[in-house]
Length: 184
Image 1: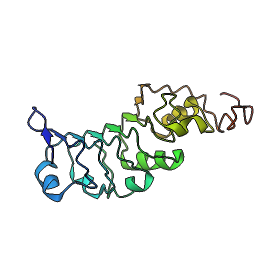
Image 2: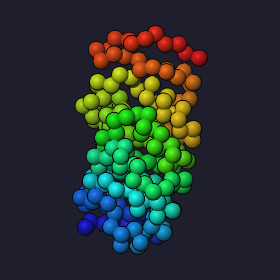
Image 3: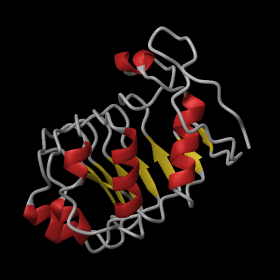
């Protein structure tokens, strides 16, 4: 297992590309009391039940784990101390469900990134399905901003709370508008 700890009193635990499905209990016991940044990118994480033991955790990176909404449900209790959550290049496909789970599990989140997931119409071509979404990036970012009131950064920029919230998807699959919308 390739493990790297940070230089600042081992507050960082980096376990990238270890083919992990869960974090081994011995690592949870050894590192949960002091880890502030945990990077488990490029694994196969499917079980997060151990994550609640990391009471000092502020930054969590779970990029490229092929995770979806059911994997978030394995978390046994909320992590109110978590400020940064990176879930790039996973398989989150239901915007309302994903947002509800994130709101419940990470109530004080300030930075969230979902690039490369089916729910994110980021235009960065990280996810081939994003071109087929029935909503655009403004709808997506407004939806998340309305749901996560403490969020300051989403994906690649500052959260804009303009309250021009569109209540319907904006485009049909062929790019034509579905409905006329109004702004408040």
